[in-house]
Image (tube, rainbow, N blue to C red; front, top):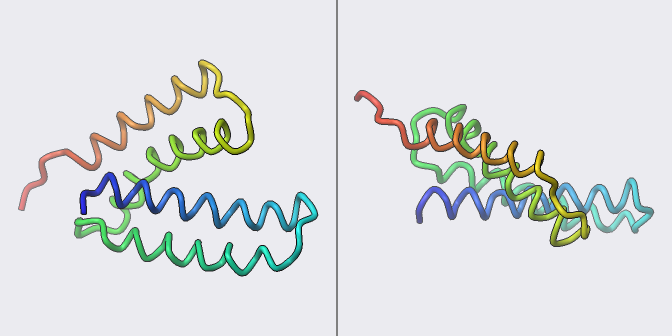
Length: 108
């Protein structure tokens, strides 16, 4: 499985898990939302371990750009708030940084 697809799945799992807690604690949803939220956050953590790198920090750093993109997609698709030009510019910069981290040739 390619790193991009792992990162995309991890982002979906993390955002869904965090949203479940948001719904419970900020939107008045049932505390039962914490159950799928917790399961989703566990899946997120497990997915990040599948990234082919020797350094966890590098996997987490590169994931940041994908997470930002996925968060804005969630905001637009689920919450109905369209990203503005600053959101788009910011995510483009973050994806460039993530690509440098993930795709750079490494010695050894």
